[in-house]
Length: 442
Image 1 (cartoon, rainbow, N blue to C red):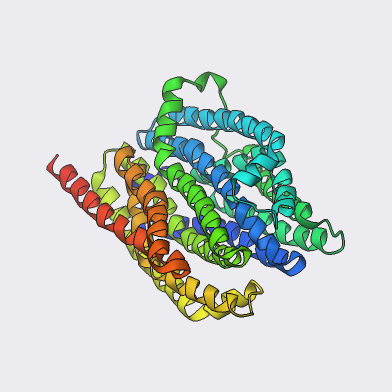
Image 2: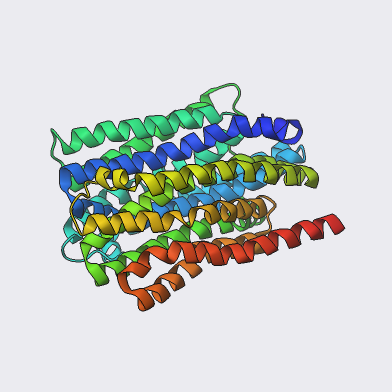
């Protein structure tokens, strides 16, 4: 498949890659959603609030995976495009080494200061104990969680996207089974919920690691590949994607703090629902964008800019289909979504329905911004991609939240997504047009 990145029909490649990438991302997201539903069923709405408070930890680990592995995989595909397999493999070695070192450091910090981290994330006294129990288990599994994120990229790029799907399905299925077991018959409470999630990710990782036992594996580790220049290029290429995730973590933390101060734990539960809905939408959007990522990077490495334009056009068509599905689900399915989270009583029900539908109006712009972000990132256009990532995930979200809350009170919380994506779109489209025009002139 690596050679197909350069020579295969773009639409055919999308049809091969898109389902696998979306399925892997959607499985993880839906599993997280089902996980929360099960937690709410056994442990109540306070557990939803606790998971929402801990969500920035997951986002941080995902951000680091994108920074280290997402960046290294982008450069990996670039050298595939140049026909330099040896150099591309060196970036796999860089990703593995840095991931293990970073994971070890975070594990030591997280285990040593779990309570301080939980308080920093905004947990108040009402949910502090259950949040600390949940986070305390999570901190012991930082390394496998980060390796899981790394293998999502490299196993897929090494021509086994279906194995990635298998790994995510094992992760999702085992998480649900262990949730029901640990919270039901075993009655292990919040720490059992965290253990179920972490063990599930570890099992999914083991499935993907089976790739290295196969003859088709072309990924080989070399400690001598660890050079400062390669680390820097990997981090530079991955920075925009990781910044978007860091931004989401920071934004989630700010939202939790503001919402708790304004309305208590009940509004946090409504925000947790919207967060899960937004993550499902992003799974589709980023799935489409990531499906095109290796084709873009390889084509850019080969100097075939016409092919990169074609990938962008096909990607926009796929994003349009995703947008229609997400809009319909949010507008017409909001009561079912709220009910699935055991939110059935007023006034929380009305607030949740309002929040879901307000968020859905930002969906069309999100898809465009995400695809443009990945387009620039795949070409290592760090300044452009960083600007888009920073604006739509952090700057405009937080500023929008503070502005709208000051003007409209609690109702303003739910319109921050729309404002952030709309203003980012005003920036991203001119940047894309300018970039294409500049490349055509050259």
